Length: 312
Image (cartoon, rainbow, N blue to C red; front, side, top):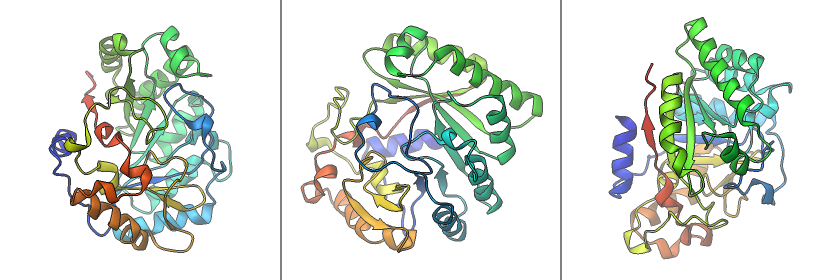
């Protein structure tokens, strides 16, 4: 029901400013990725890739824990978090730290290619609340054209193991979502994808393609500026790079607009600085006054998804 209400608010242009603190924080724990997906511009990313320092990470988590433990915290912004599975501190240490601080909604996004049996067990043990797994296909052939460098069959086995392990351990968490970005070359597999994964015990998330603020073609973005509404990402979310830079939103992967620096400021200070100015412009529909990356972006249309609950 919560997702349905949010989607309705977005489509009707009634999404409010989240107030003095963001409702969602995306943390760039690592900006490296092991795949080169066709609908993603990660291979062309120009900003320096890296891993977030532990002291910066803990600073972010500590402030969120102080301000609002119910803020949704993503353990990823624009990389593959399981690249950190063997690092010290690992992604599991990061999740556990956030949970030990009392955060109630710690989630991550992954392609699951590196999610072997040990990683699945550690994700459960760390207390992860939800995991969103990008697959985007129901056949090895389609998968290979989209999730370049990935292996469909091993990825499916990894997800099935996580679902079985949860059942064996009688663990409700993490809630598992498999994601399908609907595009021309995979739309014919959508219904089979929904049916298969629902029967497997996963929730299914179907979402539209984004253009990454105009960096790739997204023919699904058909609405004109006269129909524009305040962007969900701008109104609710804060995205922080591994260097601590706060950018426009979740599609500003190259940090083309810097709203602040968490190494020098608090999240609250940045949220109520340049980001507040952007939110005000959105609310007042002064879209022509926005920074170029935001002014010309059409991804406000893509900040939505359809959800299908697991059949088990």
